[in-house]
Image (cartoon, rainbow, N blue to C red; front, side, top):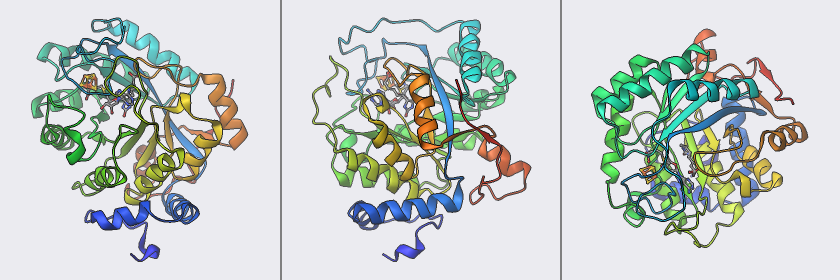
Length: 349
Ligand code: SAM
Ligand code: DTB
Ligand code: SF4
């Protein structure tokens, strides 16, 4: 393929094109990822999201990576849906530490009507703090998506996790099509889509290529693309899976950047096990978002002090003005705008 064309917003990628990106010499891939990244984003600015598990464990699904499935003995303590005030207290702390988005995760297959109404209350409260809101609650129907949108939900996270071919090895209790249907309901309700996957579950490079191709060939690219490295939790079926070559993880981030130039690509689960040098390579490859705060949902994340040191060492800044709001305010085209002039600040102790 003609590499000078990389950077265009496309929805017609072929598997062989995407595989050829994965096969590029590493430094060439980094060069193109940086080039495309800089055409669409401020190069040293990272969006910070903080996660909170608002309902933990006892999930009926069988996702082979997940410590929250009721089918695996991972020693996790179950928790019922938190009170609104507990959630808001956590959101206030996240905001004070420098996060701009608060993401509420629940171990549901799909939420019941009264659960959606309770989460809607949390969303209103977090919005009132001036933070962007994100939720991940499993499958949604179109009316449920509309109810969450009405409450002020900015983003809905629902991952495809892997290629449609490998998916059946990982999850049997809901289909790939179920996931695509939820993504469509979220989009149709007018929310932003946060959708990505997991690297390190035993998938091939072709599976990674097909996951990213499926995301890029959606009618509209997800605004946010989390790339998770499998967090291996004892008791889950994937515990003991051969770990992924760190350079292959970086390649996946770079290909996500090239396929979805305007998206925020999030360096997601797995950072606690990564060196600072590996994380730096991910930022060079085009990652410009991360989870910030000591905990993901049930597993660990680097503590705030370690991230502050990393940001200082690399000269990274936390994004303060949400990119889309900035684009709107300044009249840029959201798919192509640059946030170079965005107000940014360092995260500091
Ligand atoms: N239950 C909802 C669902 O599955 O849609 C929402 C929460 S679920 C924990 C959200 C995502 O977290 C999963 O789709 C998966 O991509 C990611 N995840 C879960 N466990 C993980 C692990 N051990 N390592 C990496 N990512 C993980
Ligand atoms: C996503 O892609 N990664 C986050 C978020 N979306 C909800 C979750 C990671 C979970 C890692 C395992 C845990 O902490 O339970
Ligand atoms: Fe349940 Fe979500 Fe975990 Fe799957 S990933 S077992 S749906 S909490």
